[in-house]
Image (cartoon, rainbow, N blue to C red; front, side, top):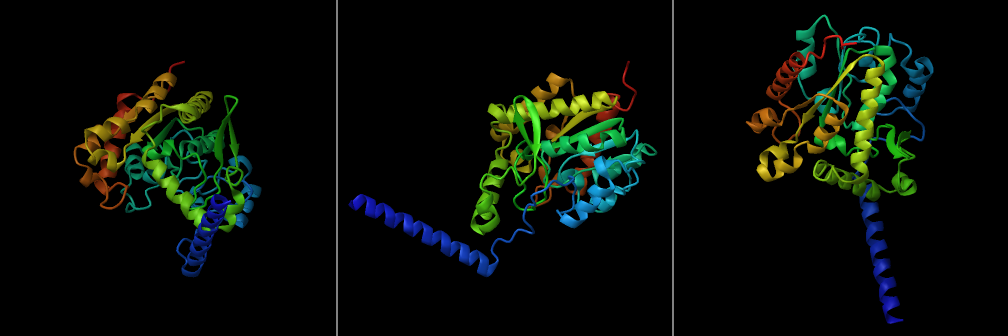
Length: 335
C-alpha cells in the first residue's frame, strides 16, 4: 500500500511539473511553432504551408501539369518554370541546395547555371528535405520537366529525415515502406501522438529536440534495419523514374562540419558507406565531397552554422562540374 501511495505521489508530482512547464511555455512563448501541420496533403515547396495558397495551387495545377508556373513563386531559388526546365539539369536537395543564406549568384546551383547556359539548371532545393521528399518531388515534376540530368544532393541528416518537420511545420508527405513498396502519407497521418502534438508545446519542443539529436547520428547506424531498406527503396525508385524518362541520376554527398572537425574516428563512421553501397547497387554515380571539404572545414562552412560559405559553394560547384564532365552525364545515354 505504501509503495502504491509513493508511486501515485511521484506520478502526481511529474504531472504537476509538466503542467507548470506547459504554462510557462505558453506565458513566455518559449516554443511557438509557426503553424501546425494541416490534415491534408500539399506540394513539397520551400514556402511554409498555407491552406489557402496550396488549395489554389492544387486546383490550378494538378499534378504539376501547368508548365507555366513560375517556380520562384513556390519558394524555389530559380528563375525557371517547368517549361523552361525541359531537357536541363534538375537539382534536388535540402537547405544546402536551396542556399537561402548565400548571396544572389553565389550558390553552387547558380554558378553551375552560368557555366552550363543555355542548358537550364533548375534549383528545386527545399530546406529540411529528406530523401523521401526528394523522391516525392521527382515523382511530381519529372513528366513536366523531362530533365536530362537529376542531381540529388544529400546531406548526412537527409538520410534520417523521414519524419514530420517539427520546427518549420511544412506539410510534406512522409514515406513509409510497407510490403516492399513506398507509400506516402500526409505529415499529420505520420504523427505518433497527434492530440499531444496539436495541444502541447512541451511535447512539440521535446520532439523537435529529439529529432535534431537523431539527425546528428544519421550516418552512424544507417546500415541497420528499416532505415537502410527505406533509403535503398527511395533511391531505387528515383533511378527507375529517371530511366523511364531517359534521364541520368547522380548523387552528391555533403558531410556535416562536425564530422570533419572531430577527427578520423568520427569521420570513419560518417563517411557515406551505406549510401555508396546503395548507389553501387543501382549503378548511380556518387560524388563524395568529404575529401575536398576535409582540407579546410572552417573556410567552407559558416562559423556557428552548418551551411556553406561562398567558398564552400564554389568548391561544390567546381567538383560537381568536373564530375559531370568526367562521367559525361549530360551526353545522351547509349541505346
